[in-house]
Image (cartoon, rainbow, N blue to C red):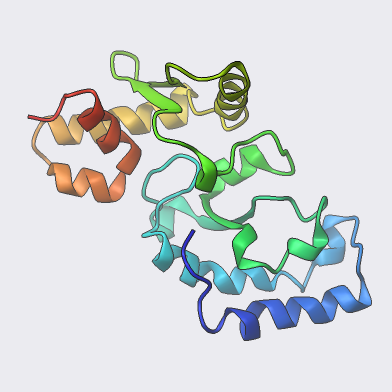
Length: 193
């Protein structure tokens, strides 16, 4: 997790707390309308995390990828965390729409190395080896909830990054910046010359 930006308290937390003092338990999405000042944190989130989606671990371009602020713990469950930097994850719109209010997705900040792996013959994300039964259940649930193996979006995107790298269109350092999980897995599996 990156440090809270200096202007976050003034721009987001204090403004949000004013709303929560008047309405401490908003139950419907419509009640949050006009009080979504967490969107003011989006530029800082994008800078702090190099425009990398916390869930698919790929670069999110502003015009086409639609970066969003995901509340890791949903605001429906914990309105008091709606305006807290520590509860924000930078997410592309697709991943945020899959996660929604669900709480069965692992926190990207708490995932251990090799819990998720890539099978490069299929481009699928799979649970890593040597996981406990509980860890494997959580990893599998995360893969399913986020549809990380959806052919139309995730698999084709992974394949495109790998094709660009293997054909020399992009360097490995570029891949590390824009698709760090793919780069990590190529290196871990000894597939980087």
